[in-house]
Image (cartoon, rainbow, N blue to C red):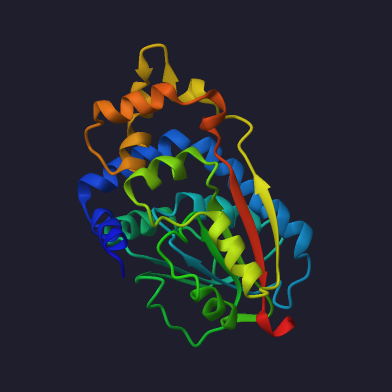
Length: 264
C-alpha cells in the first residue's frame, strides 16, 4: 500500500474528516443522484434479465455513508428483488452512518464490513458488484479477482472520475498516484477485459455552483476541503481555482460494465 493510500485511509477514520465528507456529499447530492440514475438506467438497458433477477446478491466496494447506495438500490428495486447486500468500506465512522441509512433496506439480509477492498475475500458469487467513485485506492489487478466473484450473468460496475473532472484534477495536485477512469480504461484494453463503457457529465453543475466574483462560495468550502484534504483552504488553492476556466468545472465520469471473465 503506498503512502498516499495509507493517508487516504487514515483521513477516513478521522471524525473531523467525516464531517467534511458529509458536507461534500450534501453540496454535490443532486449531481450524485444524477450519476446514480444514469448508472441504473444503463443497467436496465444492458442487463435486462440476469439469471437471479428475483434474488440478487449485491456487493458494494466503498459504500461510504450509504446515502447514494440507498438511492441506487431504491431505483434497482423497481426492476429487481434484492436478496442479499454486502457493503465494504475502509471507514468505520462512515459505516456507522451507512448502518443508519440502510436499516430499512428491503433485502433478505445485508451486512456492512470494515475492510479494504484490496484484502476482501469471499466465497460467494454476486450478481452485481458496484464501485461508485471508490476505485481510487484499489489495485488494478483486483478487477480480475472481482470478476471471479461474479455469477455467470453477473456484472462488475465501476463509476469513476475522469481526468477531466474537477474533483480528480484538484485531488491529483495532492496525490500524484490517484487513479482516474482513463487508467482503468487503459488497463482493461491492455488485458482484453470484456466490458462496455460510457462517459457521463452532470448537466446541472458549472462554475457558478462553486465560485462567485469573491472567490469560492461558502457552501462550496466542504467540497474543496474534501478534495484537497485540507481543513483550511490555503491562498494557493484559492488562486488556482480563480484561474480555472468555466469548462474546468466539469464533473465528468466514466461508467464501466465489466462482465464475467468466463464469457471471454
